[in-house]
Length: 64
Picture (cartoon, rainbow, N blue to C red):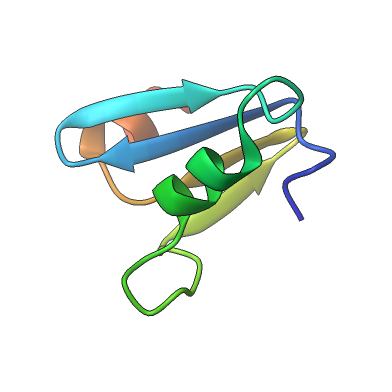
């Protein structure tokens, strides 16, 4: 799903992490976007070629 993305933005606690799927190690990216059960973390939003994974108020406020 994220292989064709231009960028993946992940909320990790209070941090906002940005990844380029073309250059980021696949295993590291999978660990960041999945939860303990192995499912994609929620919420997950696709906006254009960018995926936003996880919840952080600041991250979603910047989408306006």
